[in-house]
Length: 357
Image (cartoon, rainbow, N blue to C red):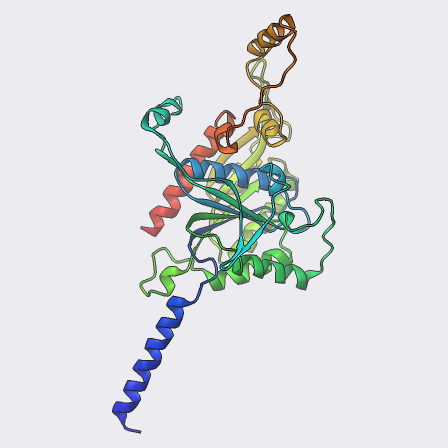
């Protein structure tokens, strides 16, 4: 075979491979950025932080997905109030459960819901979708008793067989510790994504999502921060960038007098972040309104106003409960913790998209 024939054959093979890559569905196809939510300690509120970050990013006009890989204790279906939702199968893979669709707001409505500091909110709301093993269980009370290999296989399937579509940010809610789920997740993501600061130039690599980094969640007490230090070490060893630390449950604000009580001491997360050279995103005190929101109750409002409404109902002989049928994301605006997570979302967007640019 002549040299020219060899060159022609190589060109044909390269052309065929490029066509195959264009036609083949890539894992996590359409996902732009992946953010992990980690903590070495259980019970620090990773799932609630994941959901609130997702809602805040959605209110910034970003399309968001939540992947719940806490296989033995999935919390996301309960938090979004969709425990009875079912996963459907499509040609592109599993279709995540939709929490709310994207929506364009009119300028008048957008301005009316702007924060008190005068910050202008985006004129559009991004979509939010969720994927969790909780949606696949036959009964919500079923225990998941799996060994490591089966957990690893499930993680790989979640990362390869879910059709997210166009998604700006995929938040991954993880179990505590550095167990099989974390190792499988890190191995797969470091294979399927890039941690580079700039978009790749090749057509194939540019379709790969970017592993933007991890948000570490802790509570103030030393028993929690000591475990989160191990999680930070895990990120360093696996070369996963750390975006920052959130100190959750940092005090309780009395709704009557406004006095703040430190339930679990205070400032432990900030001290840990400073000692390890990690960015400290901020603190989140306990929010009673958010707790009632995800529990399906009526949001706590002004007590005097509630008393007056109750008296009017008693005088009129009425005993009815008003149902707020607004989407979860709109009801979340009424929670005072929304302003905290709006700031967290701004910082993450500035950090991630600034580095991408």
